[in-house]
Length: 472
Image 1 (cartoon, one colour):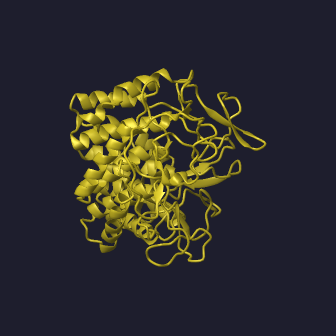
Image 2 (spheres, rainbow, N blue to C red; image 1 turned 180 degrees about the horizontal axis):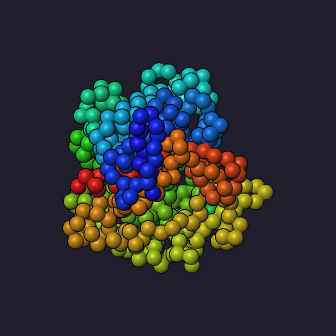
Image 3 (cartoon, rainbow, N blue to C red; image 1 turned 90 degrees about the vertical axis):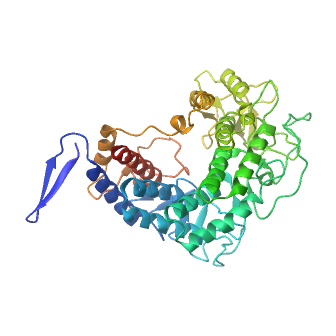
């Protein structure tokens, strides 16, 4: 049970709490956890992925003492959780901390308008980039990979809406980012993996399979300048453009969202593999990206495209965006692995699961999953039941959020989360020595203790949802 703490005549008394935690007790615990986490893990208002109790800081690899991370579950993800806590509780403490996170992101906005995966406040740091504020140097490539620019811009737009446009720096970052993001949209509605400036004009064509040997031909060296759906980009771009329309009042963003939906229609392959690729070249053929990312039909990216299309159909009121759903779902269901998962890649033509394994020279294509490198997600749990339920809701005229939003936690779960806080108010994780893939693939020793931004954000958002439920 959650202890009730009373202070009487200077004596700390702990009494057992009977029944579910009250709203006041939950909010107090949320504030205590947030205060402790910020004191231990924040730098200049921003966050990395992990901070060990000895002070080691990690993002994608070791972070310097002056770095924060943009890529989720870094600074924007923590900021979103803090906004949830503010909206649930009304306590200005959470908004104050979220504003500091927004300021930190604004510092690291690039001249090209977006963000890279980290921000360094040391102008001589090893990963410094060309920041809009003139305090950086080096790369000026705004990236849409791994939800980096999307999460930063989306958080800033939500923060601006919550503060009712009263912070001019927030509005300046948004007004600078949005037109540059929209200028990175190709004529067919797709987006590249990132941009330094406006993208080139190109003819609009439908996706098709190559008539050459895709194993060895058709490689595009700078694949990051081509159309991409990698790592959830269909869904994160959809959410970002929706926020730009709904929160920032951008009519251009709604048009860009519709145009992006038209790209997803173009990017669906014909039968017998009516799904989507991870990466497309100028002719709308699937292409290689990194050495272990082959031209193929992609299970994970196809599910993202289906969810995005339903959201776009709901936002625009245009039923054409629902057309790909049924054939794609049937195809993906027929492609499930024996364990019920989806392969990341399916071979063009044969539809066999496609993998890569290491050899002495690099990577080699294979249909055998017995010797896979552990640095990549070759198989993924399927979301097909969620997609089918969302489609049924859309056809029935019900809001998609009824299906897609996570279910709120109950009092038992809320009590458990608070009970996991240590005496100082921290959610501390102890590495058990397992080889489970963690975000950023950190190197922890067995028994090493650390703070996780992902765990903090998930727990704070869950508790905020519970508090909102109590307020209804």
